[in-house]
Amino acid sequence: MLQTKTTDISEQIINGEPVKLAFHYNSKEINKFLNSIFVKVLSKNDQDYLQGMVETILREMIINAVKANSKRVFFKIKSLDIHDENDYNTGMEEFKTFLVNENEKLADELKEYGYKVEICMKKDNDGFKIMVRNNSPLLPFENIRIKERIDKARNYNDFGEIYMDIADDSEGEGLGIPLTVLFLKNSGIGDESFNIRTDGRITQSEFVIPNAMHPSEIITEIKTRIALDIDELPTFPENIIHLQQLCRKKEVKIEELASGISTDPALTASILKLANSAGFITSRKINNLKDAIKIIGLKNLNSMLVASAARHILDTRFSFFKEVWAHCNKAALYARLIAYRFNMTAISEMAYLASLLHDLGKIILLSANNDLTSKIETVAVKRQMRRSTVLEEMTMGISHSSIGRIIAEKWNFPPYLVEAIACHHSPINARAEYRDIVSITYLANALCLIEENKFDYFYLEDEIIRRFGLTDRDKFDLFHNELIQKAADTGAN
Image (cartoon, rainbow, N blue to C red):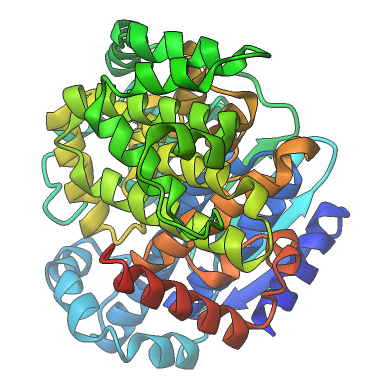
Protein backbone atom coordinates (compact mmCIF):
# COMPACT_ATOMS: atom_id res chain seq x y z
CA MET A 1 0.00 0.00 0.00
CA LEU A 2 1.41 3.38 -1.04
CA GLN A 3 0.33 5.04 2.21
CA THR A 4 2.21 2.47 4.27
CA LYS A 5 5.29 2.50 2.02
CA THR A 6 5.73 6.26 2.22
CA THR A 7 5.25 6.08 5.99
CA ASP A 8 7.98 3.42 6.23
CA ILE A 9 10.37 5.49 4.10
CA SER A 10 9.70 8.64 6.10
CA GLU A 11 10.44 6.69 9.30
CA GLN A 12 13.76 5.52 7.79
CA ILE A 13 14.73 9.09 7.02
CA ILE A 14 13.70 10.36 10.48
CA ASN A 15 15.85 7.60 12.00
CA GLY A 16 18.88 8.78 10.04
CA GLU A 17 18.92 6.03 7.43
CA PRO A 18 19.85 7.22 3.91
CA VAL A 19 17.19 6.62 1.26
CA LYS A 20 17.74 6.54 -2.49
CA LEU A 21 15.05 6.38 -5.17
CA ALA A 22 15.74 6.19 -8.93
CA PHE A 23 13.60 6.68 -12.04
CA HIS A 24 13.99 7.62 -15.70
CA TYR A 25 11.17 10.12 -16.11
CA ASN A 26 9.09 12.17 -13.65
CA SER A 27 5.45 11.13 -13.69
CA LYS A 28 2.55 12.37 -11.59
CA GLU A 29 2.71 9.14 -9.61
CA ILE A 30 6.38 9.71 -8.75
CA ASN A 31 5.70 13.30 -7.73
CA LYS A 32 2.80 12.16 -5.55
CA PHE A 33 4.96 9.47 -3.95
CA LEU A 34 7.78 11.92 -3.14
CA ASN A 35 5.43 14.60 -1.86
CA SER A 36 3.80 12.10 0.48
CA ILE A 37 7.21 11.28 1.96
CA PHE A 38 8.15 14.92 2.51
CA VAL A 39 4.80 15.82 4.06
CA LYS A 40 5.36 13.15 6.69
CA VAL A 41 9.06 13.86 7.30
CA LEU A 42 8.50 17.58 7.74
CA SER A 43 5.46 17.10 9.99
CA LYS A 44 7.38 14.77 12.27
CA ASN A 45 10.21 17.30 12.44
CA ASP A 46 7.81 20.17 13.32
CA GLN A 47 8.52 21.83 9.96
CA ASP A 48 5.22 21.29 8.20
CA TYR A 49 5.10 24.93 7.11
CA LEU A 50 8.00 24.16 4.73
CA GLN A 51 5.99 21.51 2.87
CA GLY A 52 4.95 23.71 -0.05
CA MET A 53 8.44 25.09 -0.46
CA VAL A 54 10.13 21.66 -0.46
CA GLU A 55 7.57 20.28 -2.90
CA THR A 56 8.07 23.19 -5.31
CA ILE A 57 11.88 23.24 -5.11
CA LEU A 58 12.14 19.47 -5.52
CA ARG A 59 9.85 19.61 -8.53
CA GLU A 60 12.09 22.24 -10.14
CA MET A 61 15.20 20.18 -9.42
CA ILE A 62 13.68 17.03 -10.92
CA ILE A 63 12.39 18.85 -14.00
CA ASN A 64 15.84 20.30 -14.62
CA ALA A 65 17.50 16.90 -14.18
CA VAL A 66 15.06 15.13 -16.54
CA LYS A 67 15.33 17.98 -19.04
CA ALA A 68 19.14 17.74 -19.02
CA ASN A 69 18.97 14.00 -19.68
CA SER A 70 16.31 14.51 -22.35
CA LYS A 71 18.56 17.01 -24.10
CA ARG A 72 21.27 14.35 -24.39
CA VAL A 73 18.76 11.86 -25.79
CA PHE A 74 17.56 14.40 -28.35
CA PHE A 75 21.08 15.13 -29.57
CA LYS A 76 21.80 11.41 -29.90
CA ILE A 77 18.59 10.87 -31.88
CA LYS A 78 19.45 13.79 -34.16
CA SER A 79 23.09 12.64 -34.47
CA LEU A 80 24.27 16.04 -33.27
CA ASP A 81 27.42 16.66 -31.22
CA ILE A 82 26.30 18.45 -28.07
CA HIS A 83 29.87 19.64 -27.51
CA ASP A 84 30.03 21.38 -30.90
CA GLU A 85 28.80 24.99 -30.73
CA ASN A 86 27.11 24.95 -34.15
CA ASP A 87 25.43 21.61 -33.52
CA TYR A 88 24.33 22.79 -30.08
CA ASN A 89 22.71 25.97 -31.40
CA THR A 90 21.01 24.00 -34.20
CA GLY A 91 19.71 21.37 -31.80
CA MET A 92 18.40 23.78 -29.18
CA GLU A 93 16.13 25.46 -31.73
CA GLU A 94 14.21 22.18 -32.04
CA PHE A 95 14.61 20.87 -28.50
CA LYS A 96 11.54 22.57 -26.98
CA THR A 97 9.34 21.18 -29.73
CA PHE A 98 10.85 17.74 -29.13
CA LEU A 99 9.97 17.91 -25.42
CA VAL A 100 6.34 18.63 -26.23
CA ASN A 101 5.91 16.19 -29.12
CA GLU A 102 7.88 13.30 -27.62
CA ASN A 103 6.50 13.65 -24.11
CA GLU A 104 4.80 10.22 -24.08
CA LYS A 105 7.85 8.47 -25.52
CA LEU A 106 10.52 10.13 -23.38
CA ALA A 107 10.33 7.64 -20.49
CA ASP A 108 11.16 4.72 -22.80
CA GLU A 109 13.81 6.69 -24.69
CA LEU A 110 15.55 7.80 -21.51
CA LYS A 111 15.57 4.21 -20.28
CA GLU A 112 16.85 2.91 -23.62
CA TYR A 113 19.79 5.32 -23.59
CA GLY A 114 20.57 4.66 -19.92
CA TYR A 115 19.68 8.06 -18.46
CA LYS A 116 18.18 8.21 -14.98
CA VAL A 117 17.53 10.51 -12.05
CA GLU A 118 18.24 9.65 -8.41
CA ILE A 119 16.69 11.26 -5.35
CA CYS A 120 18.88 10.88 -2.26
CA MET A 121 17.58 11.84 1.17
CA LYS A 122 19.42 11.77 4.46
CA LYS A 123 18.90 13.29 7.89
CA ASP A 124 21.87 13.89 10.18
CA ASN A 125 22.98 16.34 12.87
CA ASP A 126 23.09 19.22 10.37
CA GLY A 127 19.61 18.65 9.01
CA PHE A 128 17.63 17.02 6.23
CA LYS A 129 19.64 16.87 3.00
CA ILE A 130 17.91 16.42 -0.35
CA MET A 131 19.97 15.62 -3.45
CA VAL A 132 18.84 15.18 -7.06
CA ARG A 133 21.35 13.53 -9.41
CA ASN A 134 21.25 12.90 -13.14
CA ASN A 135 23.90 11.04 -15.14
CA SER A 136 24.57 13.75 -17.72
CA PRO A 137 27.38 16.17 -16.75
CA LEU A 138 26.97 19.90 -17.27
CA LEU A 139 28.76 21.38 -20.26
CA PRO A 140 31.27 24.10 -19.30
CA PHE A 141 29.11 26.98 -20.56
CA GLU A 142 26.00 25.46 -18.92
CA ASN A 143 27.87 25.36 -15.62
CA ILE A 144 28.89 29.02 -16.01
CA ARG A 145 25.34 30.10 -16.89
CA ILE A 146 23.85 28.29 -13.88
CA LYS A 147 26.35 29.85 -11.49
CA GLU A 148 25.54 33.29 -12.93
CA ARG A 149 21.82 32.66 -12.43
CA ILE A 150 22.35 31.58 -8.83
CA ASP A 151 24.48 34.65 -8.07
CA LYS A 152 21.90 36.94 -9.67
CA ALA A 153 19.03 35.23 -7.88
CA ARG A 154 20.61 35.96 -4.49
CA ASN A 155 19.85 39.66 -5.03
CA TYR A 156 16.08 39.18 -5.40
CA ASN A 157 13.89 39.94 -2.39
CA ASP A 158 10.41 39.11 -3.68
CA PHE A 159 8.63 37.54 -6.60
CA GLY A 160 7.79 40.88 -8.18
CA GLU A 161 11.48 41.54 -8.84
CA ILE A 162 11.92 38.12 -10.47
CA TYR A 163 8.83 38.49 -12.63
CA MET A 164 9.95 41.88 -13.96
CA ASP A 165 13.51 40.71 -14.57
CA ILE A 166 12.83 37.41 -16.36
CA ALA A 167 12.26 38.36 -20.01
CA ASP A 168 10.79 35.09 -21.28
CA ASP A 169 8.32 33.98 -18.63
CA SER A 170 5.77 32.80 -21.19
CA GLU A 171 7.33 29.34 -20.94
CA GLY A 172 8.75 29.79 -17.44
CA GLU A 173 12.30 30.01 -18.75
CA GLY A 174 14.82 30.98 -16.11
CA LEU A 175 12.31 30.98 -13.24
CA GLY A 176 13.37 27.71 -11.59
CA ILE A 177 16.65 28.81 -10.01
CA PRO A 178 15.47 32.30 -8.92
CA LEU A 179 12.34 30.81 -7.32
CA THR A 180 14.40 28.18 -5.51
CA VAL A 181 16.89 30.71 -4.16
CA LEU A 182 14.12 33.13 -3.12
CA PHE A 183 12.13 30.40 -1.37
CA LEU A 184 15.17 29.30 0.64
CA LYS A 185 16.10 32.87 1.50
CA ASN A 186 12.64 33.91 2.68
CA SER A 187 11.96 30.67 4.53
CA GLY A 188 14.85 31.29 6.91
CA ILE A 189 16.84 28.32 5.58
CA GLY A 190 19.16 30.61 3.62
CA ASP A 191 20.01 30.69 -0.08
CA GLU A 192 23.54 29.42 0.64
CA SER A 193 21.94 26.03 1.26
CA PHE A 194 21.29 25.52 -2.47
CA ASN A 195 24.02 24.23 -4.76
CA ILE A 196 24.46 22.69 -8.22
CA ARG A 197 27.69 20.94 -9.18
CA THR A 198 29.08 18.44 -11.65
CA ASP A 199 32.07 16.12 -11.56
CA GLY A 200 32.22 15.35 -15.28
CA ARG A 201 30.10 12.26 -14.81
CA ILE A 202 26.96 13.29 -12.95
CA THR A 203 25.22 16.57 -12.11
CA GLN A 204 23.87 17.07 -8.61
CA SER A 205 21.59 19.77 -7.19
CA GLU A 206 21.05 19.83 -3.45
CA PHE A 207 19.85 21.78 -0.46
CA VAL A 208 19.72 21.21 3.28
CA ILE A 209 16.87 21.92 5.67
CA PRO A 210 18.60 22.62 9.00
CA ASN A 211 17.27 21.08 12.17
CA ALA A 212 17.31 24.48 13.85
CA MET A 213 15.70 27.11 11.65
CA HIS A 214 16.60 30.76 11.94
CA PRO A 215 14.01 33.38 11.03
CA SER A 216 14.47 35.38 7.85
CA GLU A 217 15.49 39.00 8.38
CA ILE A 218 14.25 40.06 4.96
CA ILE A 219 11.42 42.55 5.24
CA THR A 220 9.83 43.07 1.85
CA GLU A 221 7.39 45.78 0.90
CA ILE A 222 4.63 43.18 0.73
CA LYS A 223 5.33 41.84 4.21
CA THR A 224 5.21 45.41 5.48
CA ARG A 225 1.87 45.82 3.73
CA ILE A 226 0.57 42.65 5.40
CA ALA A 227 1.62 43.97 8.81
CA LEU A 228 -0.20 47.24 8.12
CA ASP A 229 -3.33 45.38 6.97
CA ILE A 230 -3.38 43.46 10.24
CA ASP A 231 -2.75 46.59 12.33
CA GLU A 232 -5.52 48.42 10.49
CA LEU A 233 -8.12 45.70 11.07
CA PRO A 234 -10.77 47.10 13.39
CA THR A 235 -11.57 45.51 16.72
CA PHE A 236 -14.92 43.80 17.21
CA PRO A 237 -17.99 46.08 17.43
CA GLU A 238 -18.89 47.25 20.94
CA ASN A 239 -22.15 45.29 21.01
CA ILE A 240 -20.30 42.04 20.23
CA ILE A 241 -17.64 42.75 22.88
CA HIS A 242 -20.39 43.49 25.40
CA LEU A 243 -22.21 40.23 24.57
CA GLN A 244 -18.96 38.28 24.91
CA GLN A 245 -18.42 39.83 28.35
CA LEU A 246 -21.91 38.73 29.34
CA CYS A 247 -21.17 35.16 28.16
CA ARG A 248 -18.18 35.05 30.52
CA LYS A 249 -20.19 36.15 33.57
CA LYS A 250 -20.94 33.41 36.09
CA GLU A 251 -24.50 34.55 36.61
CA VAL A 252 -25.89 36.17 33.50
CA LYS A 253 -29.56 36.70 32.76
CA ILE A 254 -30.74 35.06 29.56
CA GLU A 255 -33.11 37.98 29.02
CA GLU A 256 -30.17 40.42 28.99
CA LEU A 257 -28.34 38.34 26.37
CA ALA A 258 -31.44 37.94 24.23
CA SER A 259 -32.10 41.67 24.35
CA GLY A 260 -28.56 42.48 23.18
CA ILE A 261 -28.64 39.91 20.39
CA SER A 262 -32.04 41.01 19.09
CA THR A 263 -30.56 44.29 17.84
CA ASP A 264 -28.61 42.31 15.21
CA PRO A 265 -31.06 40.56 12.80
CA ALA A 266 -28.36 38.50 11.04
CA LEU A 267 -26.94 37.23 14.35
CA THR A 268 -30.43 36.46 15.62
CA ALA A 269 -31.19 34.38 12.52
CA SER A 270 -27.91 32.47 12.85
CA ILE A 271 -28.54 31.60 16.50
CA LEU A 272 -32.07 30.39 15.84
CA LYS A 273 -30.83 28.31 12.91
CA LEU A 274 -28.11 26.74 15.07
CA ALA A 275 -30.57 25.93 17.88
CA ASN A 276 -32.78 24.07 15.40
CA SER A 277 -29.87 22.18 13.75
CA ALA A 278 -29.18 18.46 14.03
CA GLY A 279 -26.50 19.12 16.64
CA PHE A 280 -29.09 19.95 19.29
CA ILE A 281 -31.85 17.46 20.01
CA THR A 282 -35.17 19.20 20.64
CA SER A 283 -38.76 18.01 20.53
CA ARG A 284 -40.05 21.28 19.10
CA LYS A 285 -39.02 24.09 16.83
CA ILE A 286 -37.17 26.89 18.63
CA ASN A 287 -38.66 30.27 17.69
CA ASN A 288 -37.31 32.70 20.30
CA LEU A 289 -33.84 33.80 21.40
CA LYS A 290 -34.23 32.88 25.08
CA ASP A 291 -34.93 29.24 24.27
CA ALA A 292 -32.23 29.23 21.59
CA ILE A 293 -29.57 30.49 24.04
CA LYS A 294 -30.58 27.83 26.57
CA ILE A 295 -30.29 25.13 23.92
CA ILE A 296 -26.91 26.06 22.43
CA GLY A 297 -25.21 27.21 25.66
CA LEU A 298 -22.91 30.15 26.38
CA LYS A 299 -19.78 28.59 24.85
CA ASN A 300 -21.48 28.03 21.51
CA LEU A 301 -23.05 31.47 21.71
CA ASN A 302 -19.63 33.04 22.20
CA SER A 303 -18.41 31.12 19.15
CA MET A 304 -21.29 32.51 17.14
CA LEU A 305 -20.35 36.03 18.25
CA VAL A 306 -16.75 35.50 17.14
CA ALA A 307 -17.81 34.14 13.75
CA SER A 308 -20.32 36.91 13.16
CA ALA A 309 -17.90 39.73 13.97
CA ALA A 310 -14.94 38.23 12.08
CA ARG A 311 -16.94 37.52 8.96
CA HIS A 312 -18.49 40.99 9.00
CA ILE A 313 -15.10 42.71 9.23
CA LEU A 314 -13.45 40.56 6.58
CA ASP A 315 -16.46 40.66 4.27
CA THR A 316 -16.49 44.44 4.48
CA ARG A 317 -12.83 44.78 3.51
CA PHE A 318 -12.05 41.63 1.56
CA SER A 319 -15.33 40.42 0.06
CA PHE A 320 -13.72 39.86 -3.36
CA PHE A 321 -12.03 36.65 -2.20
CA LYS A 322 -15.18 34.61 -2.75
CA GLU A 323 -13.34 31.38 -3.57
CA VAL A 324 -11.62 31.40 -0.16
CA TRP A 325 -14.93 31.98 1.61
CA ALA A 326 -16.59 29.23 -0.44
CA HIS A 327 -13.82 26.84 0.57
CA CYS A 328 -14.17 27.84 4.24
CA ASN A 329 -17.94 27.45 4.21
CA LYS A 330 -17.69 23.93 2.82
CA ALA A 331 -14.92 23.01 5.26
CA ALA A 332 -17.07 24.25 8.14
CA LEU A 333 -20.01 22.12 7.00
CA TYR A 334 -17.74 19.08 6.66
CA ALA A 335 -16.30 19.71 10.14
CA ARG A 336 -19.75 19.67 11.69
CA LEU A 337 -20.67 16.46 9.81
CA ILE A 338 -17.38 14.81 10.83
CA ALA A 339 -18.02 15.67 14.49
CA TYR A 340 -21.52 14.19 14.28
CA ARG A 341 -20.29 11.06 12.53
CA PHE A 342 -17.58 10.32 15.10
CA ASN A 343 -19.62 11.10 18.22
CA MET A 344 -17.92 14.42 18.97
CA THR A 345 -21.11 16.49 19.08
CA ALA A 346 -19.87 18.34 22.18
CA ILE A 347 -17.24 20.09 20.06
CA SER A 348 -19.12 20.14 16.77
CA GLU A 349 -19.81 23.87 16.79
CA MET A 350 -16.27 24.74 17.87
CA ALA A 351 -14.93 22.62 15.00
CA TYR A 352 -17.43 24.32 12.69
CA LEU A 353 -16.18 27.77 13.69
CA ALA A 354 -12.51 26.74 13.48
CA SER A 355 -13.04 25.46 9.95
CA LEU A 356 -15.05 28.52 8.99
CA LEU A 357 -12.18 30.82 9.96
CA HIS A 358 -9.14 28.58 9.36
CA ASP A 359 -8.07 30.50 6.24
CA LEU A 360 -8.63 34.06 7.43
CA GLY A 361 -4.85 34.59 7.18
CA LYS A 362 -4.96 33.61 3.51
CA ILE A 363 -7.39 36.43 2.78
CA ILE A 364 -4.97 38.98 4.24
CA LEU A 365 -2.06 37.35 2.40
CA LEU A 366 -3.76 37.40 -0.98
CA SER A 367 -4.97 40.96 -0.54
CA ALA A 368 -1.49 42.37 0.12
CA ASN A 369 -0.78 42.99 -3.56
CA ASN A 370 -3.49 42.17 -6.09
CA ASP A 371 -1.24 42.72 -9.11
CA LEU A 372 1.45 40.43 -7.75
CA THR A 373 -1.13 37.81 -6.77
CA SER A 374 -2.37 37.74 -10.37
CA LYS A 375 1.18 37.22 -11.70
CA ILE A 376 1.85 34.49 -9.15
CA GLU A 377 -1.36 32.70 -10.11
CA THR A 378 -0.31 32.78 -13.79
CA VAL A 379 3.07 31.23 -13.03
CA ALA A 380 1.54 28.64 -10.69
CA VAL A 381 -0.85 27.46 -13.40
CA LYS A 382 1.87 27.29 -16.07
CA ARG A 383 4.20 25.36 -13.77
CA GLN A 384 1.37 23.01 -12.73
CA MET A 385 1.69 23.75 -9.03
CA ARG A 386 -1.06 22.31 -6.84
CA ARG A 387 -1.78 25.63 -5.18
CA SER A 388 -0.46 29.12 -5.75
CA THR A 389 -0.52 30.02 -2.06
CA VAL A 390 2.88 28.40 -1.58
CA LEU A 391 4.32 31.01 -3.94
CA GLU A 392 2.75 33.86 -2.01
CA GLU A 393 3.91 32.40 1.29
CA MET A 394 7.49 31.69 0.31
CA THR A 395 8.12 34.75 -1.87
CA MET A 396 6.63 36.99 0.81
CA GLY A 397 8.28 35.05 3.63
CA ILE A 398 5.24 34.38 5.83
CA SER A 399 2.61 31.63 5.90
CA HIS A 400 -1.13 32.21 5.94
CA SER A 401 -1.34 30.08 9.10
CA SER A 402 1.05 32.46 10.87
CA ILE A 403 -0.92 35.48 9.66
CA GLY A 404 -4.10 33.80 10.85
CA ARG A 405 -2.65 33.24 14.31
CA ILE A 406 -1.67 36.93 14.56
CA ILE A 407 -5.19 38.04 13.61
CA ALA A 408 -6.84 35.53 15.95
CA GLU A 409 -4.74 36.78 18.85
CA LYS A 410 -5.43 40.42 17.90
CA TRP A 411 -9.17 39.72 18.11
CA ASN A 412 -8.83 37.73 21.36
CA PHE A 413 -10.18 34.51 19.88
CA PRO A 414 -10.59 31.58 22.30
CA PRO A 415 -7.36 29.53 22.65
CA TYR A 416 -8.81 26.52 20.81
CA LEU A 417 -9.58 28.71 17.81
CA VAL A 418 -6.11 30.28 17.74
CA GLU A 419 -4.63 26.78 17.86
CA ALA A 420 -6.86 25.43 15.06
CA ILE A 421 -6.08 28.35 12.76
CA ALA A 422 -2.34 28.05 13.41
CA CYS A 423 -2.20 24.25 13.07
CA HIS A 424 -4.80 23.46 10.40
CA HIS A 425 -2.00 22.15 8.14
CA SER A 426 0.05 20.54 10.94
CA PRO A 427 -2.37 18.87 13.38
CA ILE A 428 0.24 16.75 15.11
CA ASN A 429 1.80 19.98 16.40
CA ALA A 430 -1.39 21.04 18.18
CA ARG A 431 -1.59 21.01 21.96
CA ALA A 432 -3.23 17.89 23.38
CA GLU A 433 -6.27 19.68 24.84
CA TYR A 434 -7.23 21.01 21.40
CA ARG A 435 -6.19 17.99 19.33
CA ASP A 436 -9.73 16.80 18.52
CA ILE A 437 -10.87 20.20 17.24
CA VAL A 438 -7.67 20.70 15.25
CA SER A 439 -7.88 17.17 13.81
CA ILE A 440 -11.43 17.74 12.58
CA THR A 441 -10.45 21.11 11.09
CA TYR A 442 -7.44 19.52 9.38
CA LEU A 443 -9.49 16.68 7.92
CA ALA A 444 -12.33 18.96 6.76
CA ASN A 445 -9.84 21.29 5.07
CA ALA A 446 -7.98 18.37 3.47
CA LEU A 447 -11.19 16.91 2.06
CA CYS A 448 -12.02 20.23 0.43
CA LEU A 449 -8.48 20.55 -0.96
CA ILE A 450 -8.71 17.04 -2.42
CA GLU A 451 -11.88 18.09 -4.24
CA GLU A 452 -10.00 21.14 -5.54
CA ASN A 453 -7.09 18.93 -6.75
CA LYS A 454 -4.72 20.69 -4.34
CA PHE A 455 -4.13 17.77 -1.98
CA ASP A 456 -4.10 13.99 -2.03
CA TYR A 457 -5.15 11.15 0.24
CA PHE A 458 -1.53 9.97 0.41
CA TYR A 459 -0.42 13.28 1.94
CA LEU A 460 -2.70 12.86 4.95
CA GLU A 461 -1.12 12.38 8.36
CA ASP A 462 -1.29 8.73 9.35
CA GLU A 463 -2.13 9.67 12.92
CA ILE A 464 -5.21 11.58 11.78
CA ILE A 465 -6.67 8.95 9.45
CA ARG A 466 -6.04 6.30 12.11
CA ARG A 467 -7.84 8.54 14.62
CA PHE A 468 -10.92 8.50 12.39
CA GLY A 469 -10.60 4.89 11.23
CA LEU A 470 -9.99 5.88 7.61
CA THR A 471 -6.72 4.11 6.84
CA ASP A 472 -8.41 2.06 4.12
CA ARG A 473 -8.53 4.13 0.93
CA ASP A 474 -11.87 2.70 -0.21
CA LYS A 475 -13.41 3.43 3.18
CA PHE A 476 -12.00 6.96 3.07
CA ASP A 477 -13.42 7.57 -0.40
CA LEU A 478 -16.80 6.22 0.67
CA PHE A 479 -16.83 8.54 3.68
CA HIS A 480 -15.77 11.48 1.51
CA ASN A 481 -18.55 10.78 -0.99
CA GLU A 482 -21.08 10.63 1.83
CA LEU A 483 -20.02 14.10 2.97
CA ILE A 484 -20.23 15.41 -0.59
CA GLN A 485 -23.78 14.06 -0.88
CA LYS A 486 -24.85 15.49 2.47
CA ALA A 487 -23.38 18.86 1.50
CA ALA A 488 -25.28 18.72 -1.78
CA ASP A 489 -28.49 17.86 0.06
CA THR A 490 -28.11 21.03 2.15
CA GLY A 491 -27.47 23.11 -0.97
CA ALA A 492 -23.87 23.82 0.05
CA ASN A 493 -22.30 22.67 -3.24
